[in-house]
Image 1 (cartoon, rainbow, N blue to C red):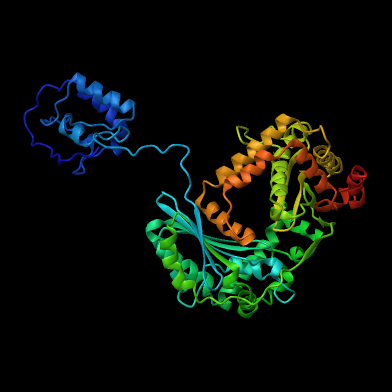
Image 2 (cartoon, rainbow, N blue to C red):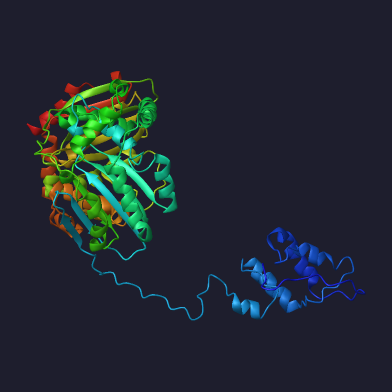
Length: 546
């Protein structure tokens, strides 16, 4: 414990009788002498040891009461204060309220959120924001561009653009950008999908102007240095060699073999095109697609007028594109098999979600279906929110010890989507587990198979997941930007919760029947020869629809 005044050892003097209580105190303090020092650097061991050498410490006046107090404080992990009185009054314990401090009042639960405000600049770029009372803010720039806009001449560009985020621009080097982000304590990220690209910057409100300028400069003024592109291409090649180590992601990418057209374009850059990727290859796709009318600058935690005053001078002259023809896709189903020597075999069975996000009620029902089926791994620590009462947990994981994992998943786009089951087991059990998974999918499409208790639990879990996600600044910012790109406006969360409240068990059954009436898409990784044929698995669902 450091004290407010220095402590000096007194000069030598004739020995006096031992001070009562020093021995007990010394035995306690010597256990942790390295942790307790006086302000002038003397160890307590040195101070207390002076008694054994006949020195006198006139400034220490211990009594039994004092020793007992120190022992009590030590055992309760409270700070040791050898000097009682003014020091203890001036330095109260940190886990007790400070005297005279007025705490702010707690906000009631029904405080209304700040509204989302949207301004469209003359060039078509949209600026949207929702204010908040916290000390931090998140800014994002979202572009209506992804792998579905790629052609044979630009295949793999979206993946490279994601890796080239926050690299050198016309105004800054990559190192300069990194140093500026560090100086503001910021957190930046970029994400690519088949339909949209997103760039975000999370920081304190104090640094919001700097963050906005860096974000816009990084997205608007990249120079695509060949040296930086080669570095990222090398990293992508390494990723491709390791991608099978994440079977769920690998199979989700493989399942897009079920699409013909734009959504069938790979999101992960194919190895065959990486050697020809350079600055001009990436730049052509960038300048064709990163136009003002296809961009939304979204922010959470900033006043809209202030945001507009900062961003408009930097974005007003960004060019807009001529009329854009949206790439078309059609769902056709199919299968893809990846043979690999592995202890486990992974299989994914999926069907089309027609209409995608544009069919809001339908997409909401699909989300509830995903939570209804749930699933997980063979080992779980349990506890609330782990989905231990979902159908795949109760009816599959708890019943078949050979199942390593099984879970429902969905991947929804603006006009279409995928819903299905991913499963993992040994090669000797994979055929049986595929039949079990097919039976579970058919069960949710059969009237009377899902109970009202299961249905209400799935609805409540969906609500909880939505509301918990919206507690994150970055997710709220992404929600603002992507909704405006998809719908043209930002719809409040109550809009989607209303669909949940109106959803009935019959609606859920009808949704499952519509999904399973589409063609099957199947992908597998591992001992593919032990996986049942596409025709035999499809037969289960064709008989049911008939």
